[in-house]
Amino acid sequence: MSWNIDLSCKRALITGAAAGIGRACAVALAEAGTSIVAVDVNEKGIQQTIDTTGSGFAVRCDLSRPDDVESMRDRVLAELGGIDILVNCAGIISYKKGIGAFPIEEWDRVLDVNLRGTYLVCRAFVEGMKEQHWGRIVTFSSLAARVGGIEVGLHYTASKAALIGFTRTLAKECGPYGITVNAVAPGVILTEPVKKQIQGREADYVAQIPLRRLGEPEDVANAVLFLSSSLSGYITGSVLDINGGMYMG
Ligand SMILES: NC(=O)c1ccc[n+]([C@@H]2O[C@H](COP(=O)([O-])OP(=O)(O)OC[C@H]3O[C@@H](n4cnc5c(N)ncnc54)[C@H](O)[C@@H]3O)[C@@H](O)[C@H]2O)c1
Image (cartoon, rainbow, N blue to C red; front, side, top):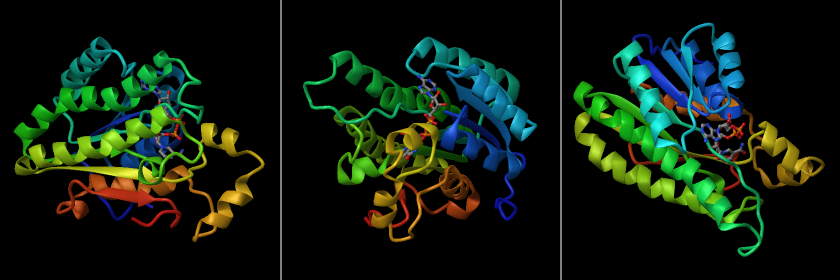
C-alpha cells in the first residue's frame, strides 16, 4: 500500500517495533524507502522485524530506563547521524481493574513506559530534528483516551490521554522548525494482547463498528505512513482516530 509515498533518504525510528502495530509501521516505512531503526525491549522480536524488512537495524532498549534510551540514541546517531521520522509506538496495554485493585507500582510502570518513555525518546531526538529543519513525530494515544477505557484500566487511559496534551504542546514547540507532531488513536486493533483479551467477543465489537470489522495493524501503519510523509506537511497537533467509526471526534 506504500508505493505512492516515497521516503527514500529518510531515516525512521520506530519504538515497539518487535510486534503488532509497531512492526507493521516498520514494514510500511521500510517499503516506502526509509532506513529504519527498530527499537524495543524484546530483542528477538526486533530482529524478526529486521529479517522481515530486509534492511535497517535493531536496538534493544527499555524505554522506562533513561540510561537505555541514552545508549540507544548514541548508537543511532553514530550509525545514521540523526533521524527524520520518529514513531513512538511502544506501550503496555493494561486492562481494567478497580481503582484500588492494582498496586501503585503497576500505575508507575504503565505511566513510565507509555508516557515517560515517549517523552524520553522525543527528548533524545528533537533537538537534532530542529537542526535539520524537517521532521515527523507520531505518538500513540488510544480510543480509550477519547471515550474512557472500555476494557483498559485507569492507568493506561490516563497515560494515553496525557499523550494528547504532550503531542499538542510539542507540536507548538516544533512547528517553527518544520517538524510536525501528531497522535494516532487506534480503536480495537487485532494484535496479540487484544486478540487474547476479546477472544469469543469479537462479534460484539464488530456490531459497534460502522465499518463492520476489527482493525488490523496495517490500518494504523497506513495512517502513520501518511503522517510521516510530506503529504501531511500542514497537519500538526492533530489526533487521528483509526477505529472504523467506533468514535467520531
Ligand atoms: N491494539 C490495539 O487495539 C491498540 C489500541 C489503541 C492503542 N494501541 C497502542 O498501540 C501501541 C502498540 O500496541 P500493540 O497492540 O501493537 O501492542 P503489542 O504489545 O503487540 O506491542 C507493544 C510493543 O511495545 C513493546 N514494549 C513494551 N514495553 C516496552 C519498554 N519498556 N521498552 C520498549 N518497548 C516496550 C513490547 O515489547 C511490544 O513489542 C501501544 O502504544 C498501544 O497502547 C493499541
